[in-house]
Amino acid sequence: MSKTKRSSAPARTRRSARVSRPARPGRLPLASGNSAVCGLQWGDEGKGQIVDLLTAHHDYVVRFNGGNNAGHSVQIGEERFALHLVPSGILYPDKICVIGNGVVVDPPGILEEIKGLSQRGVKVGSNLRISDRAHVVLTYHKVQDKLMDDVLGKARGDETRIGTTGRGIGPCYADKALRSTAVRMGELLDADRLRQKLTYIVEVKNIMLQGMARQLGREYTPFDAAALAEEFAGYGRQLAPYIGDTTALLHQALDEKRRLLFEGANAALLDVDHGTYPFVTSSCCSASGAYSGAAVPGGSIRNVVGIVKMYTSRVGGGPMPTEMFDATGEHIRQVGKEFGTTTGRPRRCGWLDLVATRYTARLSGATAIASTGLAVLTGLPVLKACVGYRYQGATLENFPADTEVLSRLEPVYREFPGFDEPISDCRAYKQLPAAARRFIEFAEDSIGVPIRFVCVGRRRDQILTR
Image 1 (cartoon, rainbow, N blue to C red):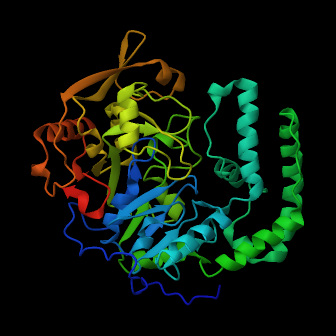
Image 2: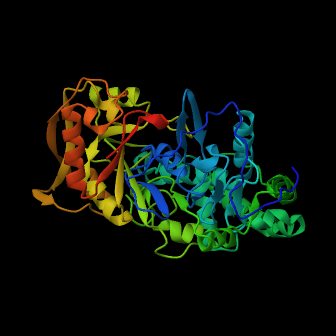
Image 3: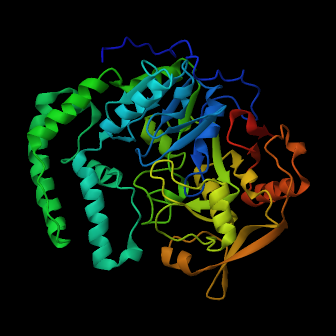
């Protein structure tokens, strides 16, 4: 892959005929300035669709946390794009997409993603930048991820498993904190330095991983540092056109009054500090993570759009107060296609939890809400929303930090009549059935943040504004 000349201004490129041109952007119910999009539940809320809509009104789209354990889906016409590391804004070729320093990057994964997008006619070139400060997911991180989960499961019981995707994200972030055992993207560009560094890192990793494998009664083949260095130096050569100082790039964009859109992965209830710990991911998922994860000044984000699905889903272990184990839960799973974008795992489904959502909206500083998943509820005779928790005879007003409490509390529901009318062809909020509007407006009042966007389907033209 040859070096690509770069400019701080968004590249102007011709859209391939295989990807439909986005409609001319209309006026958004948001203030001017920079924006962030983050999920307010346990992920899979449909962030990609809203990022895709907002991209038309911004110049840069910046991913600031997580790794390829996250997946964003974007539906354009009849085509569906599943994105894992590349920001959703890549579907607009005249925007600059940035993978910030707070992201952990799996080099073979992103190369495969770039290849897949290019094969489908999506421009990926000077419009994609990767921070040289972002950390690298190496092969041993994936082995460590699975071994650690299995060792803990054996020692403490399977119910304690976090439910990792096995993509090596947590071990990579752990090495980032350990410092001496971490590799950053910029270091892939210096083969000699990488080889020297991996020589001692691999020695430490082999000791650790061999011990865990022995505990599980498994064979372990030690990693070869030289071979690993050669492999990842090769990835570095392929990714070199994209890797650079994104901090300087974004600061220049701010100086030029460009509009930046920050794209969060995972969601606030999976935040490593504020989520349902330890059943969380390993990064800061709320909008506040954009400041450190993209290296932009505090206060530079004016709009924070929190994404809320009108029911709840989550993947992996951990408490979920409104989880359903009946036919209604299975109905929502099938109609909503609640299977992981990245892993294909079936998601656990439940009713909308407004206690948890109010907590994460405040935590994230949400200025607007985008609701998704409303069409999935079509045909259900009764809709429910959790408005409180009962625990040991007391009513809890706030979302508890203790996962033991969360796993034992009883949700308090408010019931609403359902609606039977299909809503996918509605093009204005007032066209929605009255019962659907009542459910939306009750959620808005409970969260305390205006619901400015209502999605009635997965396509670009199925987002209603209020």
